[in-house]
Structures are given as C-alpha cells and as structure tokens.
Image (cartoon, rainbow over all chains, first blue to last red; front, side, top):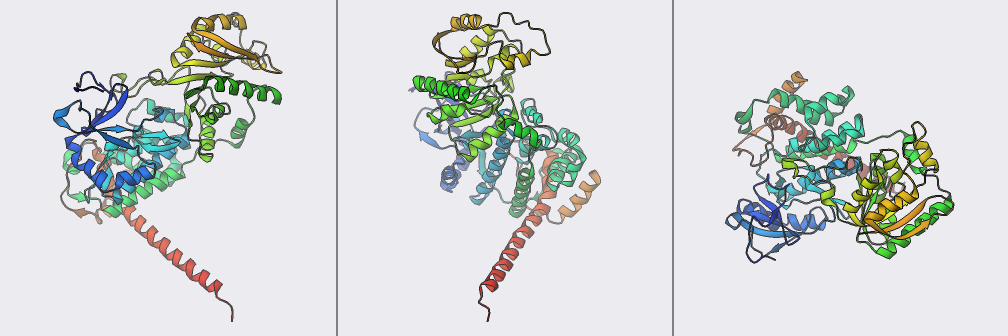
Length: 467
Length: 74
C-alpha cells in the first residue's frame, strides 16, 4: 500500500466522476472509494441512522470497510472506504429482461427503505446495481442523501429512462430494444419510447403516467428551466410513496411473453447428441474442470447454462454468456429459483462484444477490459463463429487467448449435421476447416493438454493451456 | 395528451403544499420531469392512501367473516 498518496498514480475509475460526493480509485490492485467532505453529513446519516446496516442485512447494498490509507485528494477527502469485491461488473445492456426488471424493483425497494430512515436516492442509474451472489445490490455507497421533507425525487426521470422505458419497449415491442441502453448512456429517452410503444399502452395507468404523459410534460416544459424547478411546490412523503408504489406496479406488470412454442423449443436440446454422448460430454468437461480447478469460468455460448452449472457446482464463479436473450432469461430464472449464487447469466454477442462507451469510451469498460477468467468454455460454439460468421480460426484462437488462460473447446467436424445445416444455403468456402488445421492454429497460442473423442459423436473436446 | 396533462395539473395543484425548496444538487431532474412529478405525485399519493385503507378495510372484513365462521352454531 502506498505510504504517500498521489492522485496521478492512483488509477481513478472512468465511471465515477459525475457525482461530486466522491470517486472510485484503484491502488495496488485494490478498489477504494474516496468520500469527499461535501458528502460527510449524508454519509454520517447513512451509517448512524442504521440504514446502511439494515441494507447490508438485506443484501441490498455492497458492504464496505473504512480504511486508514492516504486519500488521493486529501484536501477534499472525508474518508476512504474499501467496498467488498465484486466478482464481475456487468451492464444493463448485458442483462436479460428479468435481470433488468429485478434491478428496477431493487432500486424502488432501496428508495422506500431509504425514506424509512430519512434518506432518499439522489440517482437511480441502472449502472449502480450489480448482481452479487445472484442478487441485485446497490454498489454506489454514496447514492443516498438526507431526505428533505417536501423535496421531489430527483432521480425520477433517470429511473424511467434507465428501467421503465427499456422494460416497456421489450415487453410491448421487442426484447432487442434493451440494447438501446448501449446507445444512450443515460437510458432511453421518454419521447422516443412513447412514440414507439403501441397505443394500447395508454390504457395501462403506469405507462400512461410515467412514459406517455411524462414525455408530453418534458416536451411542454422543456424551456421552463429554473423558474419552475425552484418553485415553492412540494411533494409530500405520502405522495412520494405513492409515486414509488405506482412505479413498482408499472414495472411488476411488465412481462416478456415469448410464444409458448418458442419457449418450449429451448427445453428441446438444440444439439445432435444421443443421451450417452451428452452424458459423456458432461463427464469429460467435469474431469477437465476438476483437473484445472478454476476460480472463475466464462462459458461462451452457454445457452441455458447446462455446462456452466458443472463449473458452479465445482465452486467456480461462472459467467454464462449467450447472444440469445431468451436463453439468458431461462438461465437467470433457473439460477434464481435454485439460488445459485455463483452463476451470472449475461447476454453477449461474441461477434460484436460490449465496447468501451461513455466519456472517452472509458465510463463503461469493454468486455475485453473486464476479462478475468481462469478458464473459458467454448462448447458447440466454434462452428457457429467460423462457418456461421466467417471468422478465421486464427482470430478465434487469439480472441480466446486474450480472455483466459485455460480453454475447454469442442471441435465440431464438417460432416456434423449442425455444420451441414449451416452450409445448406451457401457455398462451402471453408476448405481449411479441419481438425488438423484447428489443432495447428490453436497450437500456436495454446498447449494442447488433453483431447477426448465424445462417444457416439465425431466431436472432440480439448483441454488447452495458454502459452 | 397535452390537454389531459393540463387538466391533471389543475387537479394535482389542489394537493400541493408550499415551503422552502432547494434546487437539486448533482443530477439534473429535467424541468419537464420535475414539474410532471409535482403534478402526479399528489394524485398517486392519494391513490396510495386509498389503497392502504382499502387493504385495512378488506383485512378487517375478512377477519370478521372468518371469526363468524369459526363460531359454533347454536
């Protein structure tokens, strides 16, 4: 730990500069948060009112320790705290529908709990919520401010933009609208949402108020500025609780309904394995996992997480990535019902992974910048990337190599029915796609530690260690 | 839509209180959102209170009915 603090040598995190209450910084590989003097009164109230302890007990806020280390900016510092470490930082555009919905409901519970203890959330950014041990928790310790009787909820607009807008668009139009959160860092604009939602959503009181009339009010009072904001009008505590209750019922009523057949298809195994072959594949993957004993596993193309669970069950924190929001939704619901605290299902398109976005592209990190896996699993995946997306094997090998040290990868030969299906309507330009070329190309980046042929199948499972 | 908003603003104004109001600190609540919240919060607060009382009334009625059902017939 540094004896002398230096703001310029500490790495200040890109996403924590907007709020003047404090900022996150990394020193010697550990994450800290400087709390500024301007937040002293609020922080003292957070602790002394018992709100912090109550939220920690409910697993609703990330816990922290106050530490005695030199602050990066001592002239404005009040305290330095060390928050509990998170296994992974994920973003709302990587969540499934129910993850975003649970994060929204968690935010409303936080606001309600805050009011009980005389505090209110001064922001309600979806980025303040993270999934920790399978639950949505508030990670911004500085989000609460002392509640002033009569003051409206400053974060109302942000809540509607970050949560209600994407959820309603996903529920009434298309799940892919949640991806707009990647375009607009401060949530989806309400006038845009209002125009896109079907007219019948005006019959739902929650959406009528918080999206349609809210957007109309924004249009109407766009130039009202300070005069109105500094008006003498107030929102009573009962009115504020009514607002929160109304938002909660609006969010709770939103459901993403896929057609019954589409959901049912997910339960049909999307592969061409016989039962013994599938069982054998599970045995091989389990044996590889037991050999490496990874702490963190990334399962790429995890579908509903059948193989991800083999890693979780062996104690690894496992992220199950899939490009299909439907598969991630099923995986998340199963994770919730089974209380699997070491599993994190996320939406990720491997051919267009999350980029760095926001101010100077540093507010939200790219997937590569967040890489922390000890072991990657790429099961029944590479044929989709090579044949389905024309990605050269060399590119895949170096992509996987950047993300994690160990690799469990399945090679699917060209005569496999899945590949034949991919080639059904196109010319076979993949003359280099063979097991020999695969082993040579991956051999440049990895040492092949083990290979097993899957029983009753032409597919092979490799355990590789990064060079 | 805007007409409805105007009517609501008159309805909501009836429930407004007055008092000192500090401007918000770091997050811009947006003037349209801020004014809209002032308009609808009183209305939603009213609904919330009615809902809370309604829950109490139904709970009381349910309790009375179940007590009657439990009483042995004479």
